[in-house]
Image (cartoon, rainbow, N blue to C red):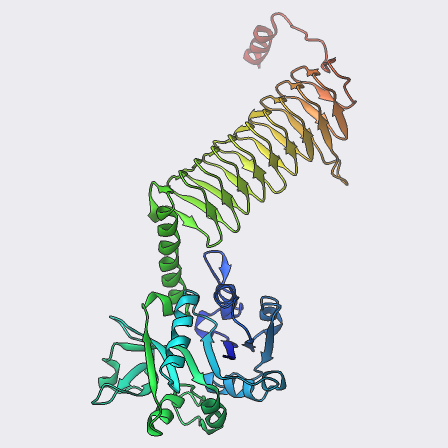
Length: 459
């Protein structure tokens, strides 16, 4: 069985009121079109029809797919007519054509396969997915004859008041016999309020020719499309609930699921607790038995098993097992932490490797650092990595102790087991097991406060 899968992704999405093409808006951190490409990745003969800002959209198309440009967006029927005029499409022979809107991200591969299988098994000319909904506003209504056979689909704008009461709606997902659509796509006309060519008119044409029409019912959520920011908001809410429920089924605890925001591609290990107001974004991976949150945002990062991240922000970073982050820590891109590392309150790291057992307890900054095992980096200490023109590296060898309020002026290397005295500004390399102290001798000026007060009183 040779099936062509056509994704219609040319629309501008006028009601979105956005410069971004409709299919490039994100749902749970992932572009709408990428949800579709994931759904059909196992299908053969994939064609994407793109139009509005097609140069941007084309960057997201699967490498094994063909791209067809619809220069003028004159409706779904016109989009398919453009496909049937494309030499790349016509270079192969097909038995069936599966048509999918590019803005229906929650449609599942299983449902599409079931549609195609039933069309083939029942030798139908057309099959399409429908849903029964409480509020059908905005959708095409599926019209049945007195024998409950599908006779046509009427769009919202063309529907009568009686037809608008029908709650059986069209999803825009079809499976056609190739010969039927090839012979009739050119018969579509734009005699409607929108002056567009509707693919739905093929259903009425098939009915008048007494062709077999099949419908496959699905849930309203699975066929939700996006034509406005309001619809995007509603769909993302449904998608978020679905993603969180899958994690719950896999043994993840959510303290308050209504305040958790988990992107589609996030992985969370069994036994992990997600506390209130936690955001896990991008391709983040959370290991087993972690405690994440509350009030934490983690983006595109790997968190090792049995780690804790509380009241903190972690971006494009990684950590091994049993790491403690926060409260109020900030791990910027390129922070890689070993086992049993601690980055504590109001500490910040950037583009640095921190070895097993090392601690950055609080109020500290490590940037462009290579920190080996079991280093203690005390409160108020910082690596001074920027000289006004270049970023420079700080190397701290195993077991070194960096005292409070120390400045390490990079490039610099602190030797194994070395001690840096509190308050020092260190500009030269420190040998292993050496003590480095850089501070002027303390002076106590007796009676200073009284003299200062007397001077003020006289004035």
